[in-house]
Image (cartoon, rainbow, N blue to C red; front, side):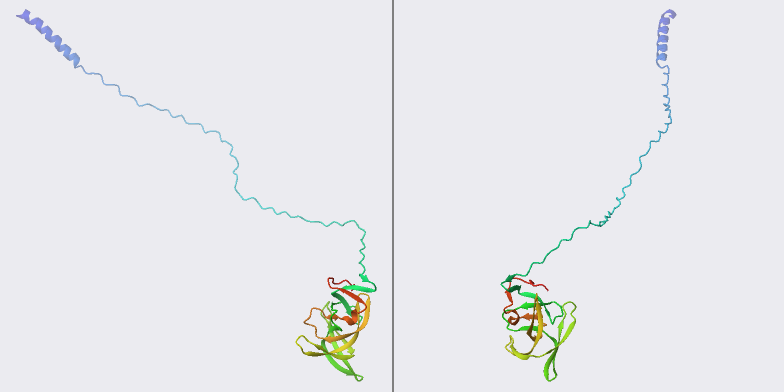
Length: 227
């Protein structure tokens, strides 16, 4: 009996040993060690030279000042301009429709209208008044100086009185005097009617009593005679 059980016991023991070896504690896996990261301090980079900051300021406004220096020109020979002689037709001088005249030999140039339709010449008389001297009729009046508008007074004996028909149809009584009138190189003591011509452009109206046998009138011309 003992001999029979022995093999069985040995088999059982070997099975038990095998089972023990199976349930033998397995070794625990190794705990992973945390990775050590070594932080190497970086060296500061070398300072790079910075470009100068360019400001966006407005450009200054530069005003250019140009100076002109007048230089003396070398002396030049003065040109002599000869005034053309007045046109003549035979022995008569040709004048324009407007000319300068001077009265009473005072040398003051006054613009005058040349009117071949007027029989007698006329003069603008301001502040006109009549008076008697030695039993004769005289007049006192003023003529404006064109240069400064000053009044130049004259006293002249009345030659006669005339009646002039106005545009309105009325007759105006005017005194007539004698006074020297100069136009160009011609001076004549002629009759002048005195009236207020302040509303007219010209103070003197030169009529046929001055023009006849002395001048020819070209209405396309002005100021042809010398002052």
